[in-house]
Amino acid sequence: MILVIAIFVQIKTIKSATLTVGTTIKDNRGLKDELLIIQTKYETVKRTLENKQKELEKIRLSASTTNETDKKNETEIKYNQELLGLTEVSGPGFVITLEENREINIDEVLNISGYLVHEEDLLYIVNELYNAGADAIAINDQRIVNTTAIQCDGNILRINGKMVGMPITIKAIGYPERLDGALNRPGGYLQIMADGGIKITTSRTENLTVPKYEGVYSAEYLVRR
Amino acid sequence: MKKGKLTVTITVGFIVLVFTAVVFIQFKTINQTDILSIENMREDELKSEISNFKQKTEELKREVDETNTKINEYKETVLTGKEASDLLTKELEKQNNLLGKNDVKGSGIIVTLQDKNNKKITSEDLRTLLNGLKMAGAEAISINDNRIVYDSYIVDIGYTFISVNGNKIVSPYEVKAIGNPTYLESGLSQKQYGFVDMKLEEGKDVSLVRKDNILIKKYNKSLDMEYAD
Image (cartoon, helix red, strand yellow):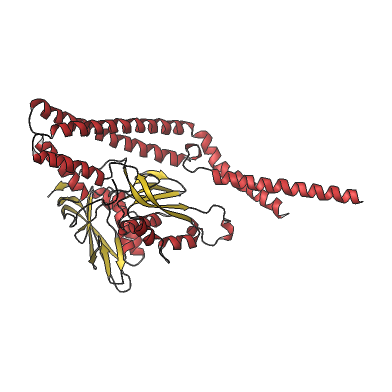
């Protein structure tokens, strides 16, 4: 009996869900194609830029051999690229995965909010990791740089403007014991989130790679004083 | 009689089994729905994603053009045998401006937050504000003259202090941001859900002004990666 009711409730839910999604999905073929085209174009321009940057690096190096100041500046430019997050970096670190618990029954839970990952959660975790001396952080392969915003766009999280889905994987390069100790301390934020219903796993690692920032820095309003 | 009972039991058992299987299959389907897949996007999501990618593609194209210009400038110095010192200094300066290694100036906004009675400003208020400023395209930010760099952190220290980059500060908190003043202001001033309205709603003391020539000091420590290479 209960099973029958459960099935009907589910069928109804799915029907209404696909109905709202389904009707629009059919009508949106044009928009989907447009998105696919612009995404392909984006990838092409991204590759072009990567090649150009490599070319610039080479010519800059060969152009800065005449005196010591130039050599020193060239080295600093390269190091700055790393600090700006424009290169992929590797090192020891700490990995956190967050998963929303989707097997819960929404009707039985008074506060669904605890079961979801919010922008504040990610801002807090990133802050804790830097406080514990992290060198480089990425969330689902989006590098966290000085201009990175984490935004909640409806029920979708965006980092660097890119959509980020579940599960969330946060990679941080730094001293593993220190990062672990800061994040997993009793009564710490991860424990609070876990108590709220988020599935959390963490691990220390000896070698971890964090991808580079794929966006562009803008300096339209900024000049040196 | 016995045979009839057995048939009923088997039939009921079979029906229960099928129902259970159906329930599990349905749960699985729901779990597998990928929210990021284009096929599952709604019309408004598709539209916002299209304009998002268009904007990002334009940004990358501009960067390609800038990189091309630099390549040609360096080539020129190599061909003519001139020194590339000026070009290097220019590139380095732009990087250092963005990283926080230089004092910088420009137009933007200043947000002032102040403790009042039992409505204290917390580190979370400041983190939310920074995130909002970055979303609105801030190019440089400082809090009470502490430059925000890529690995900055903001934490509460007891009930009195807030620490930015490990430096203790107290109310009032003056947050300076250089960037497009219109974007910065409107980003924080949306009705009801914008930062300013949300904090006012919480009873906190927040004010915002646009300013033409904001000075932001450089980071007072060194930027280093200890573990990454």
